[in-house]
Image 1 (tube, rainbow, N blue to C red):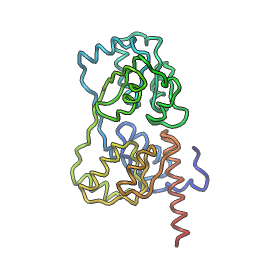
Image 2: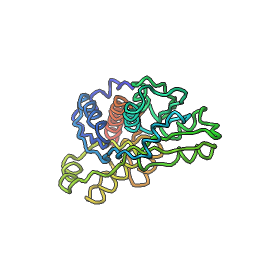
Image 3: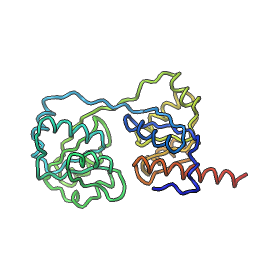
Image 4: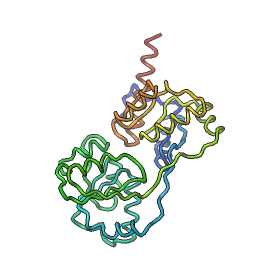
Length: 270
């Protein structure tokens, strides 16, 4: 998404808080800074690879027994490819690979893997609408993901007859920020826009606001999809933005356009 000329200065010196995990947070913050924003990184999810187990090694060694492999995030895809690089000199053939979004698909593409992904959208719901996942009777599916998360993909595919095996490769936790660290960012920095690209990130932000007494519900909140937007509205957020895609440039452009629209609306209201 190109930023319209009228919105080119919308990000100039605007305070944007990036709550994504690393390294995605720093990469996105750099894009905002190049557009003129004052961007600060404050991850609200910390991801840690899980230690290898005999059961996981067996799954990796038997990965050619699966007809479908689904990765739910770029991080899950990267960890899977690291495992395969260790145990498989060549990627096994005959597998259909799936990515929930374009970022995950790019990770697989870097390893020469053709991946199926939604033509529109980047959610589990959009992935499950793919025709190749419609009829799954006795199909073996490997679901590559974190230790916890939504069960929609697994539950839906099992209802369609698939035999789904989850392969958790990492765990997520809330970073242990001190009260001073949280107050410096939420109060001192006082973000005008906050990027929360998952439901879990949003819930962690809500919990941190409640714990520290900061009210950020009128700030521009960037969320990934309608499902998370509804969660935000239920919590009290009133100024929401869903980007055109989750590519960094599209997030930046969408925020710029929304801030410009908000500024115009505020000016007309005077």
